[in-house]
Length: 133
Image (tube, rainbow, N blue to C red):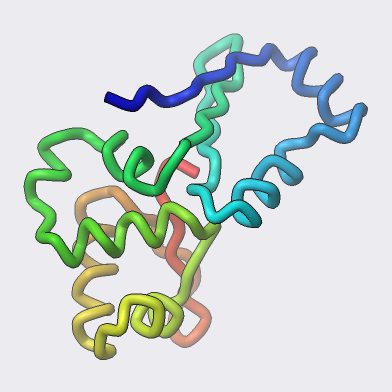
């Protein structure tokens, strides 16, 4: 069983890391370059919790089991793809997954309804990002 790596930084340490060039943006960029899921950040006072995933499967597995149990194989595969991107458009998702427009739209809509994704924007500028990133 793969465990996720969790780092806890206080606000003071986060500022120090930013000053030394180890900022959160560079961690996000390096993860993307390596083809790994984008790190997630949560606030658990007084700590900023940074979760680094070892694989896209690990990021998908980090969801609540009741959510994972409702996803079919294509949706799980799509979720693994989404975990490697900071955001995605419907067109990018459809092309990457080799789905038609309607199937991609159904997947994205369902993942938004389950609280896994956030919809940002409207119309042709709509993007989707993981809800916890």
